[in-house]
Length: 103
Image (cartoon, rainbow, N blue to C red):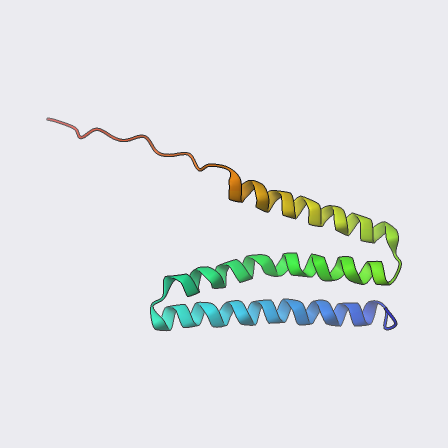
């Protein structure tokens, strides 16, 4: 990057700000319209905002040819991706059926 760390910091700031604003707008719309999916998407966007930050940092470090930190950042992305994969594919435990009590 030609602007160096200052430009990278501004891009990170823009990504984080956009993520929070989009998330807030979705959640407010979900509350106003009483739409649960909008609330859920707002929460998902808010949860993915830090992941977007790591993507931006990884790309910025690679463009600056800071290979050591770019590889560390790439490793963090791999950990985040594997965590999301496991969370999406692991079966949730079911609560056992409770028999009604007789007095």
